[in-house]
Length: 77
Image (cartoon, rainbow, N blue to C red; front, side, top):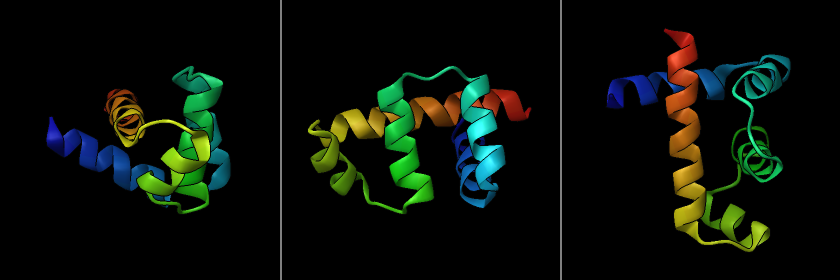
């Protein structure tokens, strides 16, 4: 399971902006999830910076990112 998340993380980090947003459309995320991922993978912010900006807990950010890794991993298989 962790290997799949790592592959998903690597894909998200290495993808083009176009591929990144196409993937996000495929996995049907909420607007807040998309903002978190945009901040993380496009703008390079840390999870703490994202939590402060989104006015949410760091656990929420961590959970969102983990959920997306799992969804992306399923699509990459």
